[in-house]
Length: 115
Image (cartoon, rainbow, N blue to C red; front, top):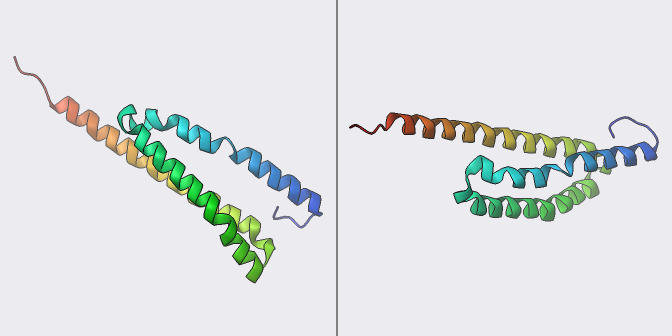
């Protein structure tokens, strides 16, 4: 989408981005019990659904406002910024869950039953 080619190539690029990102949301929901445990998965899935729906509600009008006042040619940059934010957020959650799981394992190992 960033290369100045005919409009059909921009459409193909947008479709490829959409098809490439489509499985991310269901995959993240599917992994929630494995990442956060079954006890908390219902609450966390509710938060994920709320965040996803809020983003779907707010981001199109925000970009519409930007495009109306600046240029619709900023769409690729907007998509790159949004994808970068999602990648950063996902990796941050991965780091935090890894630290928490390591802490829980160390605590469980330090608790020993004495005879």
